[in-house]
Image (cartoon, rainbow, N blue to C red; front, top):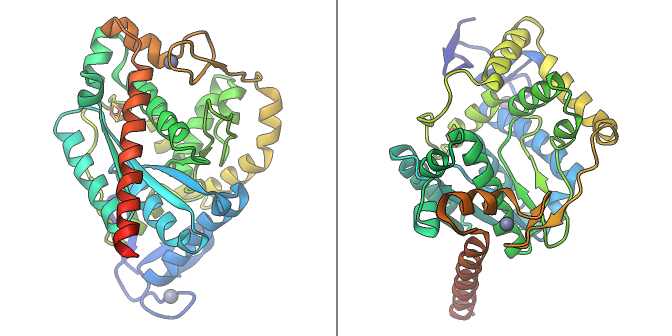
Length: 347
Ligand code: SF4
Ligand code: ZN
Ligand code: ZN
């Protein structure tokens, strides 16, 4: 049996048959000892997602904000959610943030827009430069902070702001099992149990301040999410962010864990399932996170002023949280107006 290594993905080339139906297999899932055809691989991935939807109650949600970066993982997540939640009448709203990272951001924005259009959900595109008058690299440079730390703060703030304004039940993100393993192992290394407890399949909402996160790809590996996107012909952006640090700790951990998985198939899924089971324990070990309300924008903050308002005030002279919230309210109002117009036309 010859295996072809394509973009870190072992795809079957020769005549293995699907362990379920006997059709030609396209992939070998070593840890499950399964060869699968496209149809049964799709089912295999969606079964893992369905477990998380059931566990987190996502299928009973009214409205969910889906973070769409334009990359393969969030693309796979949105595609799966759009088809799996259709029967449950969950309203999905895609949100893409154009961070102003040059050509990379432009291409990501196009893919995010194309995907939302394809699955038939509205897409809110937040172009930072247009909304704030400043991009992430400029913010980072002027604040003298690492680009990725500013980028993370901006993304978290905007996604939460959209979710609060839209009165959503959840923000869904495309973090895979590999991300969760790398992030939690890093937190364990630094003994930050509060950080571990925030990496559960879902986190809770604090009404009007912070909307809970849900991670539908919690048990799906990066390789599986890549193959899922490819076999479904899902549009996604292939290149890497030019601002990505050369050797972040998380990347090193991922390489190490991939090596372990090759030698001990199943170690990732065992880790992730046990982590899920023990999450309650890390919650009680972690420091109680208590939220206050930012005095400028009114969203969740651990201090008097939230990180986003602090950053924007330092860089531009004004805290810009409220400006972002007002912009989002305007976009949501026009989205609702468009929907009612379509309903009137349709009736
Ligand atoms: Fe943002 Fe850093 Fe990720 Fe680029 S690599 S998108 S700058 S967090
Ligand atoms: Zn099959
Ligand atoms: Zn604020």
